[in-house]
View 1: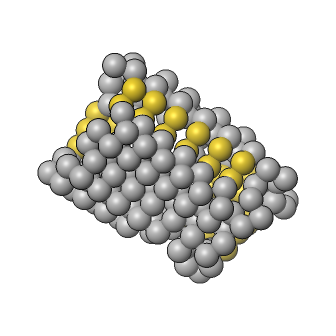
View 2: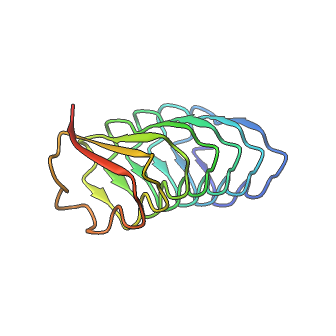
Length: 161
C-alpha cells in the first residue's frame, strides 16, 4: 500500500491513534476527516501529499509532525481541528491549499520560504491572539492569493529568519 484512499477512515469516531506505514506517500482527501477522537498520528518520512480535508474536523487532534518530505498541504487539510496546538510546516512544502488551517487554535505558525503558493482563506477564523510568521519574505510573494489571509485577524510578521 502506497496510498491511503479518500475517506478511508472518515468519521471513525472511536479512532484515537494511528501510525501510517513507512511506504505510504500520499493520503487522500478526507481520509481521516471527522475522526473526533483522533489524538495523535505518526506520519512517515516519504509522504509527499496531504489531501484536501484529510484531518478536517479532527477535534481532539492536538499536535502533528509533518515530515520534511511533504510538499503539498491541500485545501481544508486541518480545517476545524479545534484542539490543534502545535504544527510545523517543513521547509519543502511549496503549496498550502485554501482553508488549510482555518478554524484551528494554533498559537502561531511559521510559513517557510519554500512556500510559493497559498490559496484563499488559508487561515480564516484566526484571531488577534494568533501569529503567522513568514520566513524571509518581506511582503506577499507573487504566487500567494491576494486573499490568502482573508477572514483572519492574526498578526502577520514578515521576514522571520
